[in-house]
Image (tube, rainbow, N blue to C red; front, side, top):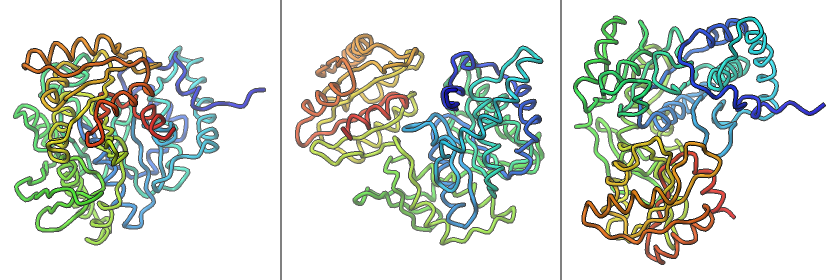
Length: 433
């Protein structure tokens, strides 16, 4: 008999469809003995910065001596990185054992009700069961999509609820206004939890979050960015200060100190709830945080290579800020792949003034991928509208794209590969080959 493959089972195409609602997750976890009730949680929702903010919080908690769980998506390099305990990916053996138990209950549900849990519902059950078996003191859990009806929202008594910066994304499911989307994200807020939010740019979004907190009988804390001082990159570190305390982070994007400030407010909220975290733990935790594909300088060159997972207009805007900050005056070549259902034209416009050349490529094995030819056409049209005339090429695959981009950048230039988190592992594979 073939050995059970947990990754193939979870990624089974039949389970891939999105079906909003908590009923299946609740039923599946009920059959597993409600592992979530044996855990404490920090629950994180929003659009941009969820992963980085989760990583900062988890790193500080681990530095404080707590056994941590971290649940994030999508994965960047390996599937197992979505579920981590004390910074270590779940082992394939543990993933296999837990998934086999989850499968037994999932298939029983399907036989009895005709509904099998979806891919993300399976992932949530596997993660929470593994964290409970591992004896985690606290889990930092990232929402998959939205918040109110996301599978992770079976968390009933979180220690803290964190809302990162909200943008217009997944509008077909979450609503077509910032206020509507914020209301969905704020669905994670529960009575008794500390609530920390990015000071949302849109007034309606902020009002929706405040209304959800008021309904839960709590207040919203926001970081005070007037007390945030961001300094130029020093080698492989980004120094900054927040409320008079000096920090350094390995995450080099110009926006990362702001994400760190949000995480610092969440940590302060946990302290208020009795979690023992020293000032030294916080400084060390921020400095040791690692999070791939967020303005990650993977090679100093020549030419320098940056990999960034920015895949929506806000992500593109902060990418442009970071490139201006770190590589002002350098020749920049964009290597881009993107999904067809993203607002890629707005993304292109955000960074176009910085791009001397573009290499467009299709993400392989992704049904939603925009073709390299169509992307090149969009780049040409958006650049022309801005009065720009960059060199635009199309490559057949990521290996050829990286070689071409490096040639176009020259020895003193910068290759910025971006547009889709799905392509990061392919790009890193090409760079390591």
